[in-house]
Image (cartoon, rainbow, N blue to C red):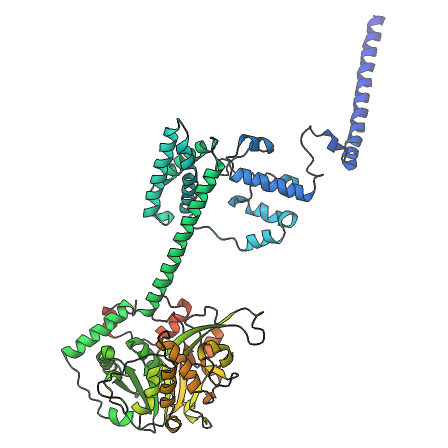
Length: 595
């Protein structure tokens, strides 16, 4: 009995002693573990073969991250390459990307570089890894369009490079035939489809078959020289094709901007047919008297475009304080004469008078009856030049300018009873009253125009030649020009222009180039500079014009190739022109002009 009690007490004492020792051990461990992490001793506990991410330099971490991302994206490398990386190469499409909320550098190594659903994580790492390019890429990231078509083209490019080498391998006829069939299939699909929407429904399976064939081809040892030679050949073919399409695009663009749109051609033809079907009665008996009255405000427009000349007249009349004293003279060719005449008889512009003249039927002095006059519209040029101050250092500048054509030098003879006219190009829109132009004191000058002092005659010497002229004289623009016809006649400027044009004409020179040189030299020293606020140019080529500047300008000039009546016109400037169209005319609807 006594022995049993002692054995029970000894066992209890041993259990109590074990608990005390366990508690003391836990206390000691709880103190040692934080001390180990604080002193960095835990780095020595890593398994062999894996270096610490914390101890690596930043460049090594960046290199490892980039290599892993590349392996994940383009993961069909050789066996040796797959062993050298820490993570087996896999495609992003085969396994979902790892989303790690930890923002430290070591935890970010596993993130694929171009996966869409890890943009936020990569954005957090910009400041740690990539510098300014990463921020730029995030700010300018654009959603790639037609990704499937681009992927098909890439796979086709790779397959074409491997096919010649695989075809030469013995006992690989099956793989060679498989590559050939896949290449032909993708070529057929891409010949019929240019966007993802046009692709057939089973295109994903075709792409998988191509990828599988390429993966098999990569397993074989092929001569790198053969693949390199084929890639260079495909590259040369692609470059030639790109050059061809670039030249074709330039040709089609010039064709589009110089050809009358189908709707406007339809309108001109319908009006001409209607004119001869039932000739209208010209009830405006006072037109002849008003068209020669020197006390009125006379505007001259050279145009073969019915709608363009109509917009110029309509916008001018709508913003004028008094339209009764306005007379418009539209000079056109014989082809568009009857269409123009019927249009302006069918449409009225308040109390203004509109006269249409066929320039080819005019009988002028110094022109024999056998000589036919041809309508020529204002000539437009794109001039590239170096700055005068530092011609070698400064970059090449480009200015767009328009100048008088040969037809403009017939004005004093066509309007012999008038002393002053305002010449408007048919690609302008008037936004303010122009009556103040008639009170200009031109001080003996002939042509009041907006000058381009950023472009001087010295910078045009390759166009003007070695003629005697003031090299510091500014170039000037057509579009809005106030012409003193009386002073023009006194100085015989028409004869001066014809003499200069005849002297400069060579077999290599075009008519437009001759008009540029002869016009600038004929009016040298005879240009009266008007305020540039009168007219704002560039709406036919410049996408960056300020909207506020457009609203303040008295006249908008659509100089350039992208006219507002063309489909190629700059969209954000078109409504300034379209709001002056007469949309109620039935011929506009029949020819789909309003659309």
